[in-house]
Length: 84
Image (tube, rainbow, N blue to C red; front, side, top):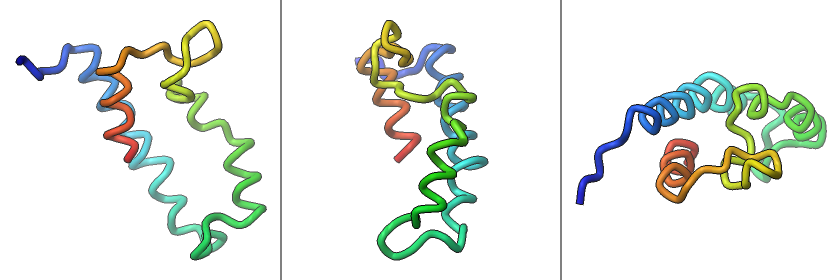
């Protein structure tokens, strides 16, 4: 089997990797993160920032007709692997 990525999937992988590194990982150092997850103010901020939507990475698993990316299984695996 050939597991090489197409240029489009490789670009998606890079986009997700950069988004996680630049937007999500810095939030892990936010003092509002508790041992049980983000407190209410951080949760509200994360819900209203729509960073994922602005990066066009929100709801990668949802069909495009419902506002998601409409990715196939291979593409979803790439997104989930990078996000994990």
